[in-house]
Length: 310
Image (cartoon, rainbow, N blue to C red; front, side, top):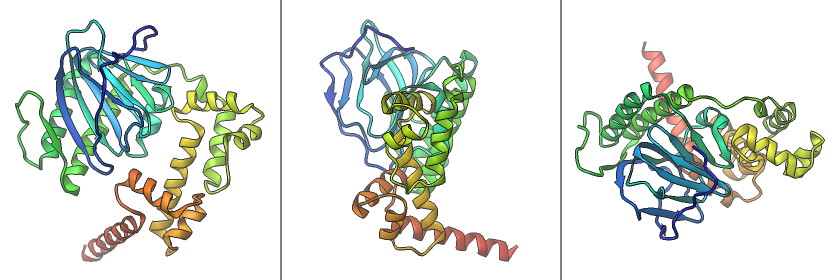
């Protein structure tokens, strides 16, 4: 649950995060003194699910004390500051680093506490055992289909190969659905704001346009600061984060459906630098734009061959 007074111990130390495109999951049982600080965040999403004890996570002015059954998520580029909560004897939790599927963001949005920090809580106790079983399966699937759940104290697994990654992501998607669907959803007043919906429609209609916080705010007759606050509160993302995600989705569709060069796809999608575009596209989808196109084409050829053979 959100707290106001507690802070993270100064003993939290910098720690590397997994590279983008990799799915890594594990279970930790940490004692007081454990802490992680990543000032620049990570290129991947971080999902934490508390089994027992209490953890403290902070992003900006927002703080979350994570107790048993709480799912707390940090988006890419969000400062990572988390530790065993002051006064707690331990923090037992599952964690996963990965590239989240785009469909997950709307499920998490009602639980946003700040830009890139989501606290899905409270999850009913009747779902705790089921969610824990899904994490067990995710850990096993990351090690390969048919693997046994490891029994070592703090097991960690990296999903190698596309099959292991997809199995692990499918399991994590089940966790997100169970937690978001079972938790007490906050009042939807902010999400119902017609001005926020209008801004989202403008972004979706033309992601490649030179949108800015100021131009979007002016289109709905709000000041930039008020607009950014309402947008983030309603969607769980800042306007510029939402714009970047829309541009990346648009670029992915162009790569799938056209023969435009990567440079042209970048320009049409609103990215002024093809190098910047390639870097953040890889962060989101795990592969560079050219490899993404080649992979989608191979999948389409397989689907056509399968349909013809039936």
